[in-house]
Image (cartoon, rainbow over all chains, first blue to last red):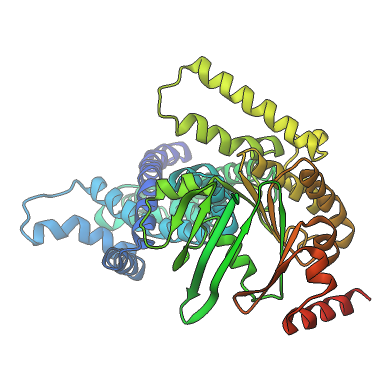
Amino acid sequence: MSFLEVTAQLANGFLTTLLIFGVTLVGAIPLGLLITLGSMSKIPPVKWIFKIFVWIIRGTPLMLQIILVFYGPGLMGLGVKFDRLMAVILAFIINYACYFSEIYRGGIESIPKGQYEAGQVLGMTKAQIFFKVVLFQVIKRIVPPMGNEIITLVKDTSLARVIAVVELVKAAETIVSLKSLIWPLFYVGAFYLLFTGIVTLLLNYAEKKLNYYQG
Amino acid sequence: MALLEVNGIFKRFGKTEVLKGIDFSMEKGEVLAIIGSSGSGKTTLLRCLNFLETPDSGRIVLNGDEIYNAENKYTDREIREKRLNFGLVFQSFNLFPQYTVLRNVCLAPEMMRINQSETKLTRADKARIKSEIAENARGLLASVGLSEKLMNYPCELSGGQQQRVAIARALAMEPVILCFDEPTSALDPELTGEVLRVIKELKDAGRTMILVTHEMGFARSAADKVIFMADGVIEEYGTPEEVFGSPRSEKTISFLEKSLENIT
C-alpha cells in the first residue's frame, strides 16, 4: 500500500474525527451553560441533581459512557437504538458539557461581587448584569482552561473506535491488521499534531483578541 | 420638610447586629459625612440606602414618600426603581473593565431608557436617545476632568481617574442623593486630592451627598452635618464644629483622638 493510499484512507477516518469534534463542541458549549445554571441553582434539590450528575459523568470513563449509550437502550429494552456515530456524539456532548459546566462555574464565581453590585446600583436587571457586564469577563477568563479541554477533545475522539466507529485511529488499525503495516499507526500522530496545532493557533488568537483590557 | 428621613433601621447578619436603630434626616443640598471606626456599621447603613442590603426593620422616606418599609415586600422591579433615587460610588470603583470610559458611563442609562422602555422605540428614537446619553456623558466626564480619556479602558487609568469615572457613571443616572463608600480608601495618598476636589465641586453645585469616609479633614471642611457611628448606633450627630470641636460622647472623643494621632 502506497503512502498516498494510506493517506487517503486515513483522511477518510479523519473526516469522522472532525465530525465528532465539531458536533461535540457545538452541542456541549451551550449544554454546559445549562448544567452550570442548574448546579448553581438556589433550589437545593435542583442543585444536587445537577451536582450528582456531573459527579457521575466526570467520575466514570468516557469509554464506558460511549458503550452505555450504544448498548444501554437495547439492554434495557427501550426499543430505541442509536446509530454508532450518533451514540458516540451523544456520549461526547454529555461528557464534555459536564467538564465545560465546571469551567463556566469557576469563571462565573471568579467575577468580583462588586461588578454585580455596580450593575445593581445603576438599576440594571439581573439578566442585563449577566449578559452585559459579567458574561464577557467570564469568557475572557475561561478561554485558557477551555482551550485545554478542547485540545483533549481532539484526542479523545479516538475513543469512538470502542464501538467500531471508523475514526482516525480505527482507520489506521484497519490498515495495520489487513495489510500488516505498522507505520500508518504512527502516521496518525501527524494528523493529530496538525489538528491540535491549528486549534492552538485559533485559541491563541482568541486570547489575544480578548486581551485588549486587563482585569 | 426633610429630603431624606431614615427611621429605626435595624440590620443583623446571622447573630451579629450591625445596625441597632438608626434615625437621621437630611435636607436638600446637604452634605452628610458618616465617620466611625471599621465595623461600626457605616458602610452597612449606606448599603441599606442603596438596597444592596435589606434592613430587617425601619423605614426610609424620600421627599415625603415612604420608599421603603421593612414590613412590606417589594418586587425586584420595585427595588430597582427605588434604588435609582440613590447613586453609589464604591471604594473599589467597580468600573466595567471591558468597556471604554465613555461606555461605562452610557451603558446603564441606555439600558434604562431603551431596553427597559415601556413603549416600542423606532430605530431613529433609539439613535436619538443614544446620542443624548452620550452627549450628557461627555459633559459629565468633562466636569470630572476626563475629556481626554473617553476612549480609554479602565485598566489604562490611575485609581483617581477610575474613581472620577465612577462618579460620572453614578451621576449619569441622575440620583437624588449621591452616596460615597470610602471613595478614597483604595487610593494612593497623592491621588485622593483629585477625587476630593470633584466631591467638593459637586457640593458647590448643590448636590445632596452622603459620604462615608476616613478622611477626617475632608469631612470637617466639606460636610454640613457629621454622623459619628459606633457599634451600630449614631453616637454623635451635628455640624462639623460640634462633632469635631466639642464632642459630647466618650466614644467620639476617643475615636477623634486616635484619628488625630495618625495624622501627627
